Length: 83
View 1 (cartoon, rainbow, N blue to C red):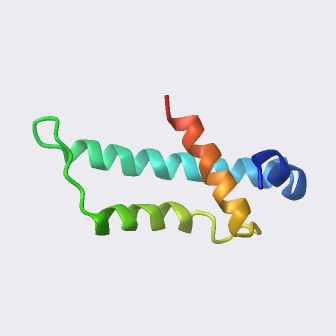
View 2 (tube, rainbow, N blue to C red):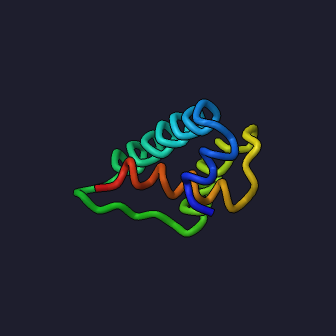
């Protein structure tokens, strides 16, 4: 599933709201993790990484996206945040 198909199926308003929430949540998590770095070194356990991934995915629980659509929306959110 690609992002354009998600927008086409669910509409721009729904998709935009999901993107706003996702980008905001991802930025919060990144800020928290960066702030917890010691001397520029970030140490994170697999459990913490899983927990962060679940926090991101939970932002989409109230939206009508199926699993493939959620993946497409999350991937697009990372594109917005990433370099």
